[in-house]
Length: 86
Image (cartoon, rainbow, N blue to C red):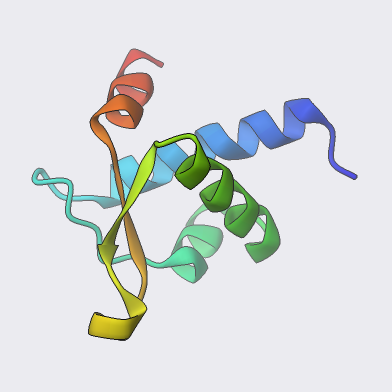
């Protein structure tokens, strides 16, 4: 079981990756596989972080699998502020 420090670091890294991969309008075309590859993290770590960020109100859907064939994520204003403040 990963410790809290590792989980916290994964959350920060996933938020920062989504921030970096999004355009100036907070639009993102990268899915969890892309984020996993970008960060060098296991997909399960990225999925866990994404689930936690949704629950915390830090993510919203950008593209939906049902509509677009891919699920991508956008940071909420709250999460953008956290990333920008470090």
